[in-house]
Length: 154
Image (cartoon, rainbow, N blue to C red; front, side):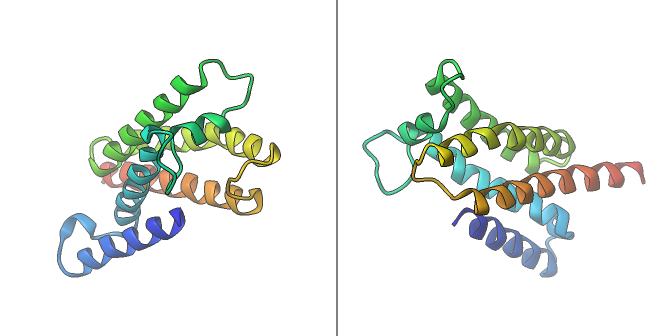
């Protein structure tokens, strides 16, 4: 579902570019905005109360945090804030490079929680699917960062 949101948002932004909206004139910028939309969606789970059951909630996210990480509830809130900040950074051209690099690092840092949850038998995305998804997110974040840097050199 998350990848579908990323892909649909990216294509929608690129179609806006094809219709003349200059902001979305390239695939990399459209993908950066698509990733931002996806991050707003995924970050919302970090703040959803435990009573909500139609989507992942804060308690589900806390359960994914490996036991050696202190203050798991706080870490979940913090990563949600970082995802939202990264989404905002991606849509602003001036901060897109830094946001892309920081998000790539965040995605690498979050992967152990996904591995931990899958190996602990939690109801999460299976690793055979999750690891390629994480690689896709890292690639898009870095693509946005690199293309922003190349554009500013011209």
